[in-house]
Length: 144
Image (cartoon, rainbow, N blue to C red; front, side):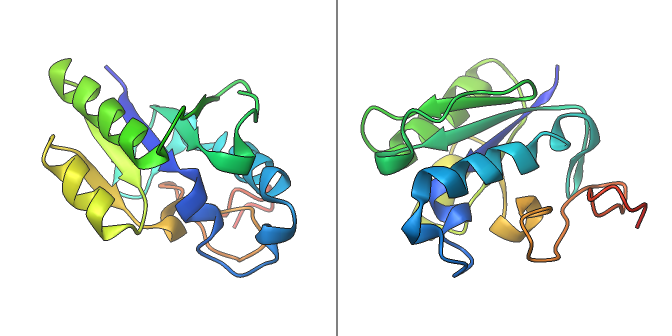
């Protein structure tokens, strides 16, 4: 069974002051698109394949799923939906990794056995030069 990678869109998008506040939906769509390679390659410390879920809220609601990344628009709090996903994974005996820097959210999901990675683990190909891919590539297609 593939590990579930749940990404806190608001937290990851907001982790770098790159002007995301001018276009929250566009920033979330860029993050969604950058997450596609993680499905096969995995995320730092968790080799692929993984199932990737991007949880969105607020102005980012309505961002569509793409092959390789399921987008879930939280009806209320994105954090609450992320906790629900971690609980569902635990009930199914499935591994879960949550990408967030939110300390309270980390506390809540680890209570269900989820592990956590910071935003930098999933920010590859967003122009900040970081990469969380497990195979050592940048994901930018340059072979580095």
